[in-house]
Amino acid sequence: MNWLNNLKQKSPKQRFLFILGLLIFCFYLVLAYLVSFWDDFPLEVSITRRRIFSGLLVLYATFRFYRLIQKEED
Image 1 (tube, rainbow, N blue to C red):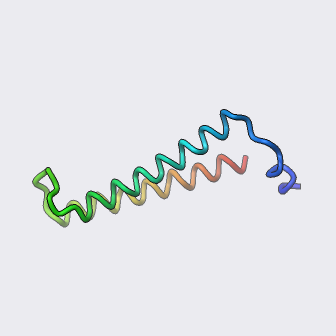
Image 2: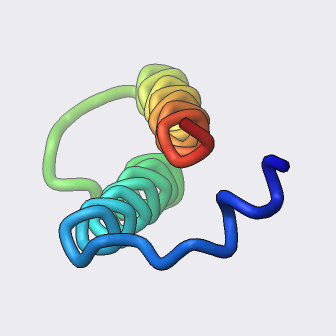
């Protein structure tokens, strides 16, 4: 019966929020990549701290994606 629920049309609000959630997920991944690999980073931060921060951004993006998928299944 769960697959029948997936065939139903979503409301425009639900579609918009889902797409917005995907865009935010992609934004955090791109931000993590930029922080980690940008050679001329404008802030004076050690490479180790930049990599730790980018790892945290990836974890947060993964968490947001997981919550987005869980919300869609409800």
